[in-house]
Length: 190
Image (tube, rainbow, N blue to C red; front, side):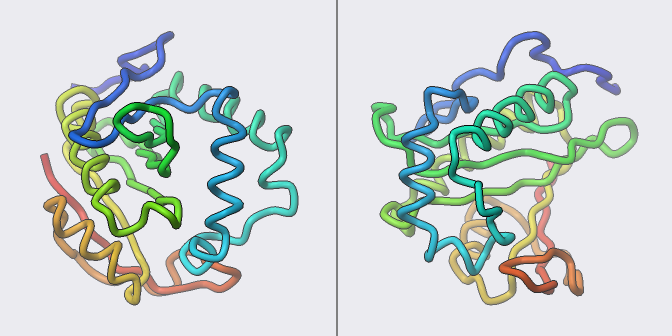
């Protein structure tokens, strides 16, 4: 079965609840918490992410980001979620199902980041366990793909804990921290 529109149109995705986390669509009210956490975590995140534009943490750039998120959700192209603590008072990070492909593929790409103060505490594992049923049961995806740098032991362990299997190596796959870098490719099937 092929979906031409988001199952939510015109609504946002539901709040997803993990054991210790809550995932919800980003909104402008999240700007300060997002900006503070990204700023605090910059050195921690830089080795694993593309270079940040000079204006990345500005309110105007965030507003454009939110507008793009809403377009992507409405077009069934991506489903971004901010991750919060269970009481929804503390932003922990984010994850996104992007590059949604329908038709014979029914797949998406998983991306994620966690703030430095919350790394290696099980929050991302919990968030991913909340996201995957949404991906498979609500979006009706058959496959979720992820890629990470071969030296990112924490990310590799996260994906394996979540049932992803390594499928290969993509040479010079993404431009991370200013350089084209190889990535390990992982996938989880429905």
